[in-house]
Length: 130
Image (cartoon, rainbow, N blue to C red):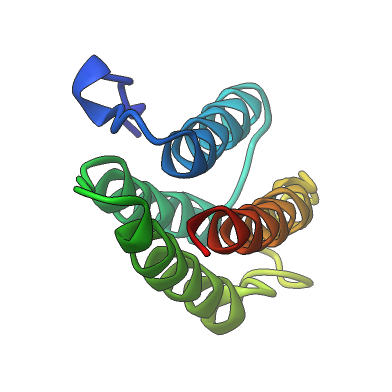
């Protein structure tokens, strides 16, 4: 799987948006490195592919004002959360296709932590905008 590449153009100048972007990017990079060193199932590969597509969409978001940040981040976190809810636990879990690598559980934990942190950041941003 191709790794996402960070580009300076992803920075918006708003830390309430840039922080979640950078954190998600770093989390996915760490998970992909973990996948390179452990045998894993095709379902995990498919999940990471979908998460990379969604992350790239968030990374490319541009906003013109702090008020647009909440809408941008909340829409992407909801989409990513929906993907996790639909695909986890992976269908391969507890089947012969599962390699007991633990990456799916690690991905679930990390990405849900990112969602929670992003939600807190959005609330902080709303306080700032008020």
